[in-house]
Length: 505
Image 1 (tube, one colour):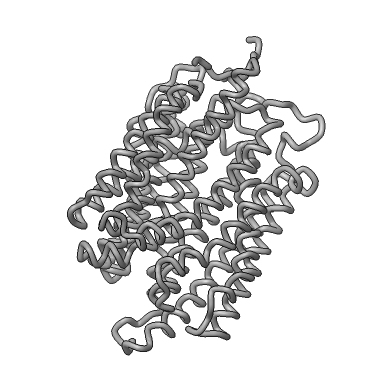
Image 2 (tube, rainbow, N blue to C red):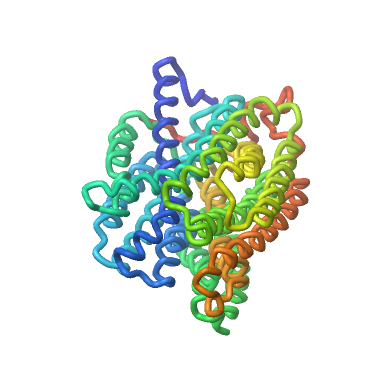
């Protein structure tokens, strides 16, 4: 089969950069929605009278539904077309955002957040898959550098945007505009996506593995649900049994996927991807890094808002230096640093981020509840630079050797492990943060000190996880394939498959 370029002329070249802007905006919208709720928690709690358990579901429910559906969403894109699934996902996400914004009670908000997470799971895997099949290998470094900058911007723009929208109290709607802002963005993404995104799917006819879908969803729920509710329910025995049982279900899933591959070649997860060393190592790093993000962003918000008593806007603006540092380091890392230093860039990122955490621990201890936002600039900039050196090259390294026809499956797996890590991190907050806060014994004026100490305790955990990440990174390839001089422009196909996706406008 003769290989044709995915992008044949100047007009198409312009189209793909417009398509990139559309899918990156959707990815940004999803990232903002993960963090935007944290800052508006007090407002939601006051307006709806939501319990602590409900608040956990409003924040972690999105991550739970998202993580549970990502592998399936990625595979559906391979089968039915990535453009089609992206458009279905962005439509559902926009409608779910409207339902969140008009929620009358905590139950409706939780249900709408679960729906939002599930529709994001259809939309988000297509982003990396569309990038992977639209851009040749030598250009992906630049694209993933931009993608990393968007990740950094999204991570901290959420709290700032949430703070501004809640503080402004537009039309007396209080916290509701944090969800309603997705409506014009989603509608624009839908209309422009229909026009500019190029359709692609796996060249070999695949069928959806429904048994695999059921097994992987069950395993993820058995793992993440007890972690999310554990603290509130007093860590019941059934929760521990559920988490242990999830390992068995995952093992059974792997066995079934091997059988399914032999039977008809249509598994939910292409297990052959894990024979690609860069992919397997990258997924392990993605999982542990997700835990870091899940713990840090929530405890940081609790520390500033509840512990220090800062306003929404003050807490949101404090994160701006972090966001700038992530974006700058991410943009620089893939194009300038990785071609020269390879995986050492990612390891330097982990070490720099850990050193930023240590500075933060020292400052939180030294200044106590009298700490000022300007005193947090140094640790946040150091942490942000470290994170930027990880997020962009990691995506590039994980996908560098993945065959194009498995782009959706690989993208779903990458996103799933990151989100699974984040959901695990959110669940672990109840252990590492609330586990060191004895709420019953805190005197009213002692909550700030208790939260500051719990914040420091949590950051030690995050630093320890980063040390693990540093070691796991030794399994990454010394340099992503497309950065090696003389490397092939496209990855070798897995034996028995065709490398070229079906492309149609």
